[in-house]
Amino acid sequence: MIRLGIKGSQKGKEVRKYLDEHPDVKHIIVFSPKNEARYFPDSGGLEFEHYGWDDIIMYKVFYPLLEKIDNSYLIVVNELMRTRNRYELTYNCMHHYLNQTTHKLVFQWFPIMDEQDDFMILLDFEHPGRFKGQGFSLDLLDGIDITGHDMRPSISIINVDVSEKEKSAYLEESEKLFANLGAKDPDTIPRQMELWVGKIKKRCLLADRLYVARNKRFAMPNVQSIKDAINDGQGGILIDMPHDRKTLNDLLYWSEMEKLEFMATPLSIDNYYCGQLEEWNRKAGDIYAKAGIH
Image 1 (cartoon, rainbow, N blue to C red):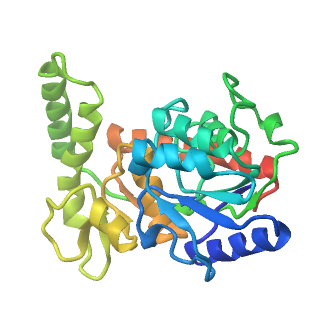
Image 2: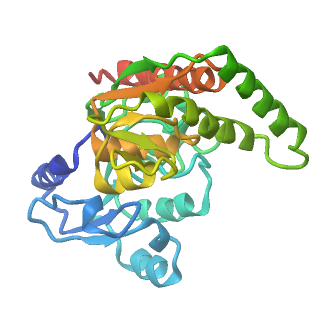
């Protein structure tokens, strides 16, 4: 069973519903990004073992769990799409656990990180080994027990005007970064340029609004870093777009933002991130539509 877009306050109820329908289940194991109550706050009054991402591959966890997991166990896979590498070691260890029982409940806020192929990670949790080596197609959703809610936020772009002087400075900065790139990762350039463009956006910040930036460089009381915003479960207007999709997905999950507002200049770096966001929205939307999730 794959459940998309289920709030933390509802997950315990989903587990309770599963237990009511499967009285043979006597034990529950929850796997989350971290072994903290924050990651599975509503147990529905149930007792369960809780393990974090780092625990999954540890010998002291792996072998004892393999020895005891059987069809009396329900395994809850909670927001565990943490890397796009479908064959990553942690995923492989999870598959070993999941092969021990027929009772699986997979929670994930969004169906993908970047690409539709990411959904195969969830299918592999639900059906370990069945789709090995197979790429994603919408037809694979036929016959899969998948329900939930489409939690994609509406997207609102706050346009920031840029002067000719600022355009010239932007071009000069990007040319300098390219000239000094050498053997560095080319991805460092868009990351640095997005931070640089933040200097232009700073003059447009309003004292009565809450903002989110990649780091604490603004030193303003109404501007949180993305890390702090995720930890606090608080959203805000994005000054910088996170470079990796997982970070943005985490922000949207923890804040449960219904509206994503992004400050965007007409400069190429913001056009790039806006285009990525639109593509992600479309790709996730295709999966929701096929699954009949609204």
